[in-house]
Length: 166
Image 1 (cartoon, rainbow, N blue to C red):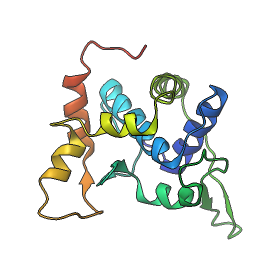
Image 2 (cartoon, helix red, strand yellow; image 1 turned 45 degrees about the vertical axis):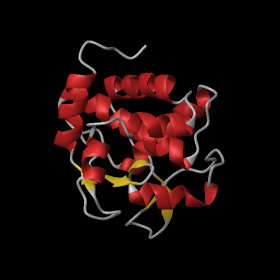
Image 3 (cartoon, rainbow, N blue to C red; image 1 turned 90 degrees about the vertical axis):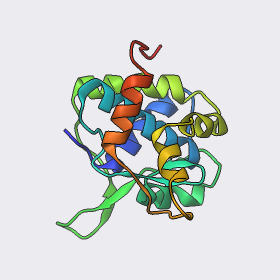
Image 4 (tube, helix red, strand yellow; image 1 turned 180 degrees about the vertical axis):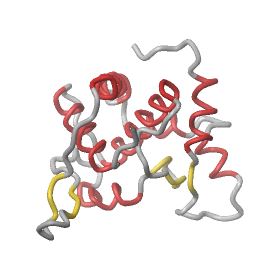
């Protein structure tokens, strides 16, 4: 099942805080990307229904970036919100995910969430990877450069074959 990125962002933020590694916006974007990549590798299906974009510092979900932009490089203390069409209010994005998906997110956050944000950027910039391929095939910088789910799955399936998350 594909999930709304705001729900996944909130789960990642909650998990990172519970593990003692609160995330900045930059780190959140990369950890979410790696959660998405591992989910694609393990299930063949996207975790997040939205596509990441290739930005200068790696993969980004633009609307998630905007939600947390005010945090700058500080740990994010708020949660992503979405409009409730029934009452017209912006409310914290909530929802249920299956236990295997939650366990996978927990493992990915445990592994990547403890790394420094710029180390996460370096990992997302790996030569030949999906970000690198999109970013380096453009004639000019274009924040709308989409990174396809297929490109992520294909690259990380071969790159991560036989390498479980510790």
